[in-house]
Image 1: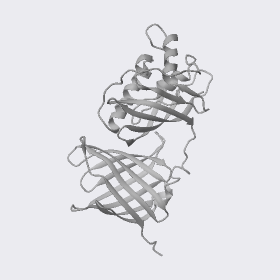
Image 2 (image 1 turned 90 degrees about the vertical axis):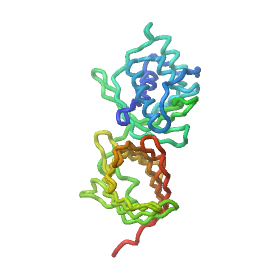
Image 3 (image 1 turned 120 degrees about the horizontal axis):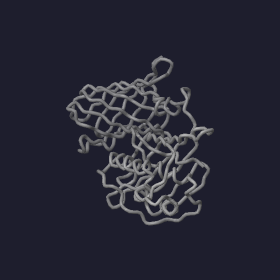
Image 4 (image 1 turned 180 degrees about the vertical axis):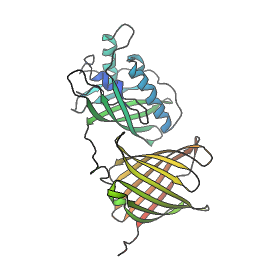
Length: 317
């Protein structure tokens, strides 16, 4: 079984590691039930709060601090490894505590967690996807896997309710745009809040996508933006960089969800204010899609959501 293949560092936000690391450790029993957890450290609301919680959780994992790790889990939180083995975390942590050193800490193998994306599906539920790597002992190969974690908000605290691990399969240059080719072409879009025109085209050797966008909010001046979408081999994910005519900049992480692509973005506005947003591009068919901008915040102040229905322009002969 993988030794916690789920350390997270989304932009260095690690979280699910201790859990899996301990679960895969000899200290973990295979037949545990749940136990009531304590409170996790407080954090602000929204996606950033989840990211902060992952950082605090990672610190507990790195320290082998079983007591603190337990406080990040719900009473019924569970972990399922890539072979389908399921564990009730609170019971497993109790067993680890009973077998650990007197100071309540245990030695853990070196782990590297990379959070690929964090997405809020409701005000009280968030999904985190990432990759975990475990340093190999002498004579063994390094192990690597993917994980998906469910965070829930309880009494103002973000807690982990479940982790699912899967085998890692490297994304190569031939397949990292799979499921996104449909977006190439020229589009027009409109909705209650705005209209837009966009053009997506391939870069040399199809190594990246280039998007040119003109967005016109109702009653406001148009905003023109240029975006590059490409593969980040270091973090093994699709990533985008965008500059707009207002003087702003955004850095986005792309993750696929069926026929939709979810882009979690952070950036800076023209006045230097920090912003976050989530964009969702959903394919309806080859010539129709929906584009959404949701959960936009600037310095913690919420913006207006935008929903657009996009139609492909006829191809030129």
